[in-house]
Image 1 (cartoon, one colour):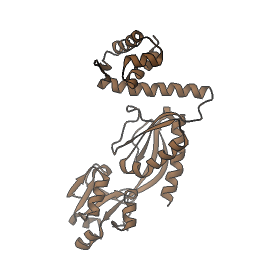
Image 2 (image 1 turned 180 degrees about the vertical axis):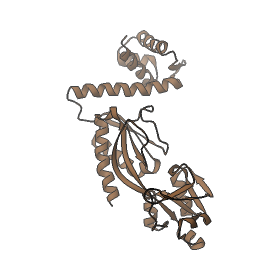
Image 3 (image 1 turned 135 degrees about the vertical axis):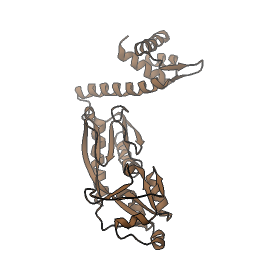
Image 4 (image 1 turned 90 degrees about the vertical axis):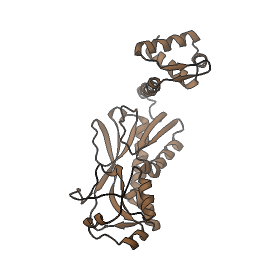
Length: 297
């Protein structure tokens, strides 16, 4: 049996949860379906499926393989549509990743417009402050904030943000407002670990000024750091978009605003082999328009 036919059978078995159901849908005999899976497992040297009398599920290796196979077949189908002149309309699945808070505030509205416009498209949004490997994890497009370290990715600048220091009015009333970056050493500080790998808080357009801080609270969530600051626990460092709403409603105030803070680019990035993807192109067009509008305000 052709390798791609075997892969399609494997995906159908996983999606439908059984050999017999896959056989009926694809119009193969149950024996042919069983043989195709066995040949795949033999060729790969690993078990792909766990079989019981009532169900079929993927092994750990099988779960990885099925996602890669979906991406492979999607790429082939898209290439065929483009060759036939049918590639204008996005369809299939688009996998997107973004930082947690930026994704909630700015990427979800992009996806809502994308799904409302393109009804044959589905999206999987992965929100994480961890930098994912787009190729290894089968992700089509990502939003990155800060310096880009990866090579081999296509990058489009969407906007720029900056790091800021904030505290609640109640904290500042009780402990006073720092006037220099050195004054931070005498204050209660909240550190959001994802902004920097060390406890050196950098200032200046290029980060040329810094102060070594000893945080009383370290968290791996921007939302947690901001909530702690709003509750009066101390001063935290955040990215400007993360605290815009809190500043507007008065629950947080800028600290040391007269000292230039580091600017950070916001890029849209994707693997070079996704450059011609109708899904990625559609997402990028909406992202450029919406992000430009949001950050011009």
